[in-house]
Every structure is written in C-alpha cells, then in structure tokens.
Amino acid sequence: MVLPTDAPVVRLLLRRVDDSYGRYYPDVGPKGGSIYIDPRPEVDEHRALYVLHELAHYMDLHIIGPGGSWSSLDQNGPLAPVLGAAAETRSVERWAADPLADYLLSPPEIWARSFSQWLCLCAGTKTEYDAAARHEHHWPAGEFASVADAVDQIARSMPWSV
Image 1 (tube, helix red, strand yellow):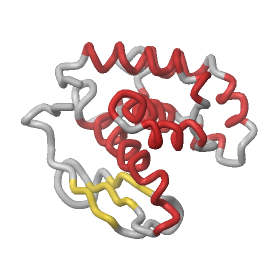
Image 2 (cartoon, helix red, strand yellow):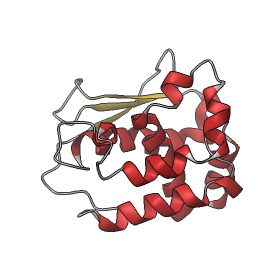
Image 3 (cartoon, helix red, strand yellow):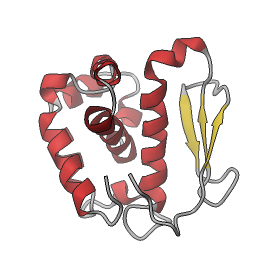
Image 4 (tube, rainbow, N blue to C red):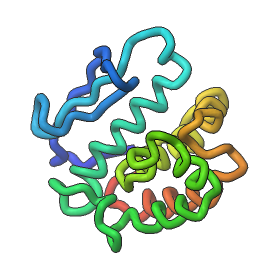
C-alpha cells in the first residue's frame, strides 16, 4: 500500500493500553496522531491485525475522503459499500447482542475491522488471516467474502494503491 506523500505523519508505538490491545489517538503526537499497540505476549496472535485495525482508523480520518473528518460517518461516502455489505452479515446480529454493541457496530469500527481483515486476507499469511477469522469481533472466513469484495473495490478506486 502506498499512502499519499502529503498524508499527515502517524506515530506507531508499542505501549500498553489499559482497556484494549490497540488504540488510535488522533490528537496525540504528530498531526496524523499516534497508534498504540499493546506489547504484552497475550496480544501476539493478533498484533498484526490490531496494527492494521488502528491504521484503518488513521486512514478513515486522514486518507479516505477529504481528510480531517471520519469518512465512515458519511452515509453516502466512499465507505458506504463496505458498511452496507457488513450490515448484511450474520456477524452483525451476533455483535448486536454483545455488551459492546454500540462500539462494535459503529461505522468507524466496522470499517477498521473490515479493512484489517481484508488486508490480512490479501497480503498477510494464512496464519494471520485464520487468526482474524477466528477473532470474536471479526467475520468467519466463509462469511467475509461480500465484505472483502466491497473493501477490494474501494481500495482499487482510491488514489493510494494496494
């Protein structure tokens, strides 16, 4: 993936995050913000997934769309096909019953999970993709195809390349 050369710099740090395994802080550090990824061993199996997930949040805010606003919150924006495809999956029903439903079903989170799982599918190892597909807040491999197709179409239409 090649991001635009004028994209704001984002900082990536291995730093413990108390209530999650990774977090994007748009207002901490350089203009593009900071991504914190938990370095503890229990994160090892999903660390690549978490880095890609937080990178997707950065892209949502700074790369996709005009920049400076969350593209995933624009119902008619460039990420609408991914959000629509995700909404038609059985996983959305499962996540709706989760205590974290408001978080899990928010457009920025749907986008970040879609993009990270798609990138594991396209550019990761089989082990990384299988770990993503087993994660309770991602799609099982057999259910992800329509979401992956939507992410793929968006990725190919963006000025950055994959």
